[in-house]
Every structure is written in structure tokens, then in C-alpha cells.
Amino acid sequence: MKTLKAKKIAVLCGGRSGERDVSLRSGKRVFDSLKKQKFNVTMFDLTDDLIAQLKKKKIDLVYVALHGRFGEDGCVQGLLEVANIPYTGSKVLASALAMNKLAAKRIFDTCNIPTPRYLAIDPQSDVKKEADKLRRIFPFPLVIKPVSEGSSLGISIVKEDDDLERILAKTVGEYHDVFIEEFVKGREVTVGIIGTGDNVQALPILELVPRKEFYDFEAKYTSGMTEFILPARLPKALYKKTQDTALAAHRALGCYGVSRVDIIVAGDQTPYVHEVNSIPGMTEHSDLPAEAAHAGISFDQLVIKILASAY
Image (cartoon, rainbow, N blue to C red):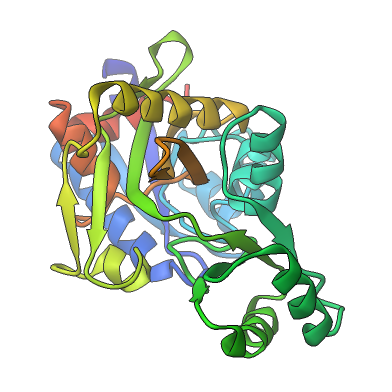
């Protein structure tokens, strides 16, 4: 604490992704916590002259509270590496892998970490041709996802054959890089991971019961849209298996300091990893702080643990 309090800290938030507003809320809450704890802290938005601004203010350490593209995908991490400014969270490669869901799933396959079956869509190909291929491989319902978006942006569950081409064309048109995932029915849970080295730990499992069809952007960030059950309603052995699976996914991608692993626990008691979020939200509705609180870690303590991971 004494070492950290001697540093000039910047909370980096905002950015240019579809998750800008969420990032601003995360950043403001982290900033308020550090300010309350008497740290020398300021807030920064992601700008083209970011490094010049950080150097001008003589910033020693950056708390990265960005979500989505340019902030969670290794871009900002690379800038900070070149500028030799320590920062929180995963480094360049792990950030890029976690953001690219297809790359992450290929690593999960290699490491024998269960993940729903998937297939990349060729954005240059004819939509009808791609849809015909999908019909031969996947039963309905199936899930269409952008490769590199967070907060469930752009995700659609396609239940009927008649809707497939229309939704596929719309998603490819908006996000370009898209993939298809098998729909796995089960309990939707999320597992926060914090710590470094031998002190990495899986937090209590949070079960999510959205009022809508699935845990989409609205369900994530609107009060009352999701029922949160903590700890998740899983038998003891399956609970530990799910935490172990989350830790394995975190380590497989090389994540560092903090992450949150989204999982579907299927009826056959297999925890299927959907994705790893390398910079989990820190808003008043976010999952990671709730899980930490259940483990006896206050929001202020959680912020310090993440901050300390920069070193």
C-alpha cells in the first residue's frame, strides 16, 4: 500500500467501443474508490494522444477500466508496453486472445477445456451458401456471435430455419467477423478470477437467471432484469469442477491479475466455457464485485488487489 500510494495513478476508461458507457461507469467507480483511499489518482479517456498525456502528467501506473475494442483487445496494452508504463490486467497476447472468441475457443480445444461446438463464417461468402452449410452441421436453435465484441453485443439465438439467413446477413453486415455456436442449454454462471502467481483464486460462482431469453447487454446493465444467485445452485463436486474449469481457461489464455469466465453448466454436468473477459466490469451491477463481496473482499480491497497486479 505504501509503495502504491507513492505512485501517480491514471484510471483509463471510456474509449470508442460499444461498451463506452459501461467503461465510464466502471472507471468512475474505481476512481472514487482510489480517491477515497487517499491515492494520487486521475481519470483519463482513451484519446489519440494518450501516451503524450500520460507522460505529461508523469503517470506511474495505469488502471485499465476499458471494455471492448481498442481497450480490452491488446491495443492499449501494447501502447503502454512501448511507453514502459505499468498497467493492470492481462498483457498484450492474452488480451487479444480473450477478445477474439474464435482464437480463444481454438485454444480451449487444444487444452481440452469444454466449449460449445462452433464454426467460423466466411464474410466474403454468399450468405445462402453459409446458411446451407450451417443447416447440415447445427441443429436449431443455434447462436450467432460477433468474433470480437463484449457485453453480449450482437448475439442472436436463431430458433427457426426461416430466420437464419436474415439474421446471419444482418450480423455479418454489422460486425463482419462472425461465428456460429451450438446452443447449450443449462445454468448460466460466471466465475471471477483474481490474483497472480501462486495466489490466483477462483471467486464464488454467480448464477445468472435473466428475465429475458439470455444474459444480453440489457440484462447485464439494467437493474431488475436478472436474478443473481450467489453462490450458484450447483452440487459441491460440480461447483468445484466449474471453478477449476474457469481457472484452466484463465491460465490457457495467459490472463493475468483478473478475469471473469462465463460458463454454461449443461445437464450432463459439463461446464462449457463461453468466453473469458480479461477486464471485467466494475459497475454497481457488475458480477466480479458481487462475487468478491461474497468471498469477504470489499470493493475497495478488490480495486487494490487488481491495482497491485500491475507490478
